[in-house]
Amino acid sequence: MSWFNKIIHGRPGSDARDPDYYEEGTVLLQDEKFHEALTSFRLALRESPNDTDVLQQIAVTYTRIGMTDEAMKTYRRVLELKPHASGAHYGLAFLLLQQAQTDEAIAHLRAFLARPPSSPHAQRHISHARATLAELTGDDGPLPVGAEP
Image (spheres, rainbow, N blue to C red):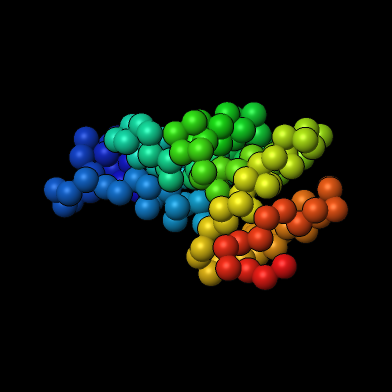
């Protein structure tokens, strides 16, 4: 862990380049080492305080360790910086549903579906958001650009 090496040795490992704390955090998050991932993401955030990608990963990590209030605050910060951040709308919507804040959750699901991510692995999230919105309202929300009704 480069952050650990930096604390112990005062520098990142044996090479002179700076560690990529974001990349390190994503690996730790995938390995379910949530507290270590959070440390790495916080170090990445110190280098770039308004990086919405880092903030979203912090929110995901907070969610995974049960710190839902902090996750919600972090998703809201992302949306202040980048109002159309689909990942923040998605994550916040489901946290709001856990707290029975249905109206606001519906608004975030609609915002997510209005500008869904285009990556291939995002389709399951889009389908989940559509199904949840339909269950809550009977409305599938806006279709992606180019999709037929």
